[in-house]
Image (cartoon, rainbow, N blue to C red):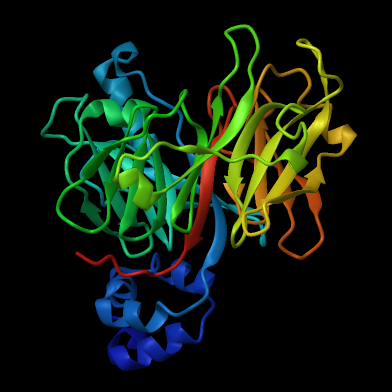
Length: 374
């Protein structure tokens, strides 16, 4: 059969056609044929399209794998199933899937994202299973780069924090690794009083919650450290004000989430009392302005929605900016707090890709055709 006349058009014409389409439609066009994929993936077109506003998506992290519990054919099946990134588009209320089959790694495990780039742990086919690499990629351009090799313990115990293409931190209770575009990681002592919970990187500082209480009663406090101080092995400082009162005592299992601008959010169950076994009446979102160091309430989950979480022993919180997701075991759906329109809205996210326990984790993904610099 003769080729369609459209394939005889010059690339400049294709560029003009694709540039007239919304970003979502351009992504769909990539799947039409090999020629469209090559044109849209070309460095020239990526440079043209890179100034487009990103799609504000929410990506899911795959569940953790315990390789020794699987037979070889089960592992291959699991690897194939997880060689993609599941994302939710809140504006269109639909699920999308980005293939990660361009990565030469087994069991890619995405953990963070910034400026259109996704950071993930991957098992190299040529290395032992315990030898993981931290990889940065763009699922839209299908480009990737392997960061300098790390020990496997960092992937098991470290939290990956990113805020730009050349600023990556892997943080644990005892040490921190910092990468800023050079060919190696810089290692510093972190000297935290306990394992950092939900650390976030905002501007030039890292913030984390640490438990300074006793073995029988948790007492959470906010700690902060600038990257400059961390490099010089300075101790973390406890961030507190007398005016804050009992802000850390009213929440059960608090978590930090990066907010908009110079703000951080703290999310947890609102205790009905200060007793050790107090139940929670809802889930509360507090907001800290890092310029004024003042807290205010950003939102609280409606009681009817919270009732679905009461039967679960724990829930997960993830997101960023003006969108936060909540998941719990065996729910099959997630709750979403969305304030992007300026007015807070709570709604359910259905059709979540099925994981075994329903305890979903994830991160914000701003999808864009960002070129990955070597």
